[in-house]
Image (cartoon, rainbow, N blue to C red; front, top):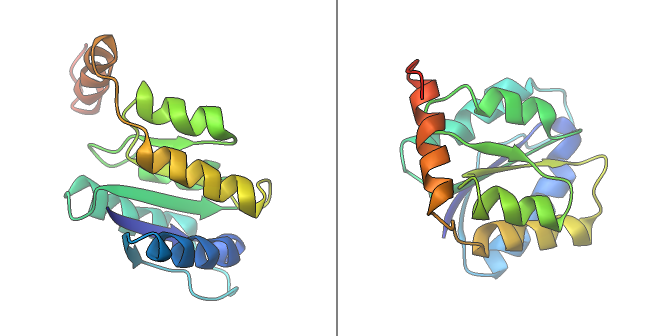
Length: 149
């Protein structure tokens, strides 16, 4: 799978580990930064990943910051993005199964390495169920366009 990944300075170490793990699994990974612990503004990184996902240059995105919340808020400003801040295996699974999330947002400060890797695997492997959930995702798209669902 083609994946774009990015982090702020607080998530740089977690991102490095995930990039290595994803590449070892055979995924194609585009790392948009940050590349050091020097302070960066997370909306800039979120924009880079979200643009690649919304343009279909990649299939999924992963964003990492201190809590995962700021990245999620920023990424969701782009049309076609359904970014989800996940904190365990269940939220990672359900973000895909019911919401067709295309960007996983993770907390560098609150999640351990093993859990983070498990969540990424689940996020990448879980299919969207469609059905009644498709109707709801389509309503989200209408909201993005300013149309009442």
